[in-house]
Image 1 (spheres, rainbow, N blue to C red):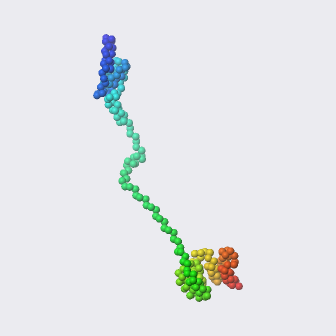
Image 2 (cartoon, rainbow, N blue to C red):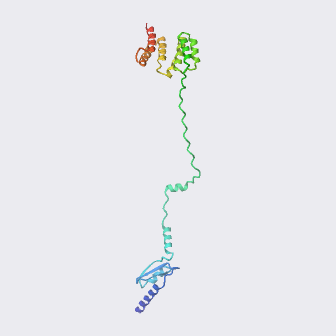
Image 3 (cartoon, helix red, strand yellow):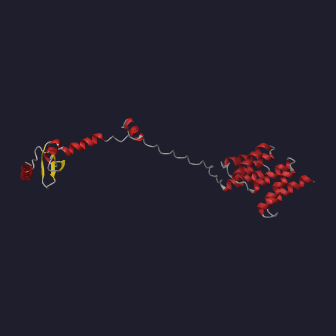
Length: 238
């Protein structure tokens, strides 16, 4: 009986080797110990029954859907990766359908305000107005100087201040001297006129300080402005 069973197993194995594997319903393949194989089993249990007694192993059939089913099962069992906080935040935030507002161009800084251009008076008219003041005709000379329409000119402002000083208008004289020195702080003629006003007002130390400044600007004591102021100071000291 044992001999008959072994012969039947050998015959069955030979038949399985000869019969081609079905690609229609095969899900499992049997690999027999003797070297043969068969891919005609629709279930794992059927494949195990076929190799019992003869030895071998069962593997998923490459023709069936077991592998795709198994991969699908594995994907189903694999837990999804938790979303990061940033991804969750992006998912919750509504999509911005509006384009960003254009950035406004910086305002252009206003151009710096520059002093009005110094007006140069007509030389002949200026000389005539100055002569009137130096000749003691202060009102006429003052009117002629203002008629030049060059009040921001340093020389004009100096002689207008001189005319006011000679007329006893101290405050007006100081105002015009200040205007002239604002245009040119080192204007020697204006400094001399201002030092004379200080000396006449009894401020001899102030007049002396102006005299020293004029000497430095002149580089000595020989310039006309220095000599004129020095004479006025000396007359007040006596």
